[in-house]
Amino acid sequence: MKNGLRRHYQKLSTNNEYKKYFPYKEFRYGQLEAIREAAEIVTLKGHLILRAPSGFGKTITMLTAILPILERESDSKLMWLCRTSRENNRVIEELKKINDIPGSINGMVIEARAKLCIKDVDRDLKKDHEAFSILCSELKRQGKCEYHNKLKIERVKLPQICGVRELMEICEENEVCPYEVAKRRIPNSRIVVANYNYILIPQILKTLNTKLDNSILVVDEAHNLPEVATEMEVEKVTVRGLDETSLEMMREGVEEYKWIIDEMLKVMEKSGEDRVVDKIYLKNILEEKCGSLSQLASTLIKIGDNVRRRIARSGGKPVSHIHHLGRFLMKLHETLGKDEYELFSGNGEMWIECFDPSNIVKRMYKMFRATISMSGTINENYGELVGLENYRYIEVSYIEKGNILPILVPNVTTDYDMRGPKMYQKICEYISIVAENINTGIGVFTASYEVLEGLLNAGIRSIRKPMYIESRNESPKINEWKIEEYKRMAKTGGAVYVGVCGGRASEGEDFPGEEMDIVLLVGIPFPEPSIRMRKRNEYYEKRFGENGSLYSYIIPSIWKASQAAGRVIRGPEDRGAIIYLDERYKRYIKLLPEWLRPRKIVREPEQLKEELTLFFT
Image (cartoon, rainbow, N blue to C red; front, side, top):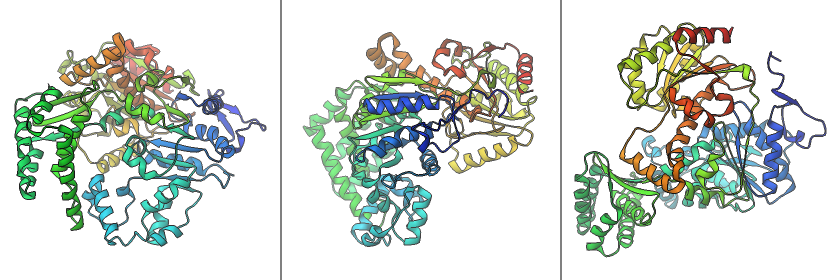
């Protein structure tokens, strides 16, 4: 065991009730405490919020706590929600490591229909999940999908713990639809692993056809859930889309509804920069001619449904602009009188935005007997933010202070009013001296793409190390290639990865060993000042009073920064340094996980070099 790791592990007692389901020789420090807390919260039918650093083993810890309950209670289930497919796969891989899981407990991953489809369908169509779902249903109805054979689907045998890879291989071999096979098994699965959407969206939840009232919910990387929940509530129309809607109305012979577009364009044409549109004002304008907004929306949705089904019958992409407009107007109707929803217009767009995820998330949590929300960054404020009642919060860590070096640099900032060439140049000096003197993997994560652009203009590319820079609109494949190339070079003399907080590399990627020993955080990822942020702050001030800004944007931004900082430690043997390049971090130290809180202050690049050299030698 490496020096400094004595408190990382706890002996696995031979009479420990959890030994049966724990596949490793020793518990990491804090795991046993977390297991007992989780088991107790399930018994009490409550809510647990768990903060534990990356590499702690949160997945196997929760599985070890919950599997004995599933074994004792034959009618209980575990629903495990993740944000990404990659995270889903990690849960399945951990389950496979556990020996002697009773035959009565099986596990299954369910993914989106489009992701599981093995039929030769246009790739672009698969990116539009709603359109693909409509086309898929129509092909099945017409008997035109060669993989939808009910008898063959019923005969397919899946392993006890089935991930996406096994599902796809078995279904391709048997020439049956993986989605239908998975959906058929879900009602009888004791462990279901899925993306957030499967519970957040009622229509998708229905497809699971499973009871949840005696189920346990685990929300993985729960810091993502509030943002995902609010993003799902956005409905948007554009000038270009409304023009297409007008043409579609003419083709469908329903020109009598074109007046809606004219009225909406009048409102949108008044907008240059983003501005607030009074929802009641728009409702009244429309109802002067239609009588009932909800009936108008329903009519448009029905017309659009007919259009989509007709297109699907001919094998085309089933998209209807009329349907989209009807859905926008229905969302407008449903959000009238709800302060957490605001209507904005600007730059050729009009959209309904949700500020507060609590009503959506509370509805989800109430479906379950007990819930566990876990992440490396969330704190007790998570419970308040999402509206939980009677929750318990625990923070556990295996990390010793000697293995982590958090440093604050208080003479730089990316504060909106302080940005400029001189400030970016000063920040680049700190980055350069680290990159050119410490031969390891280095991550530079900026507050935004605007800040990243500032570093580029200040000459960050002149650093004499292989450098890989994220771009705002690059494809996932290109981004994946950059990350893999960076990792390869980081292990052979060092490299620099430059990205943004909230990007894939800063949250969804592991960098074990020397792949990212140092992270430099350039700024705090606060949203840029805007009318949207002002209205959001006003809403949260009504809900939380003087703590409004804390819940509106400070806490989510600190969580995002903490995720990026956490790339340096992915396991007990890792050592790493985090450099906070923004004086504002000292105001929010208590919001950071304890192990990430700055312990040293550095005011000169040379001093930073000395501290890092000493730490890594």
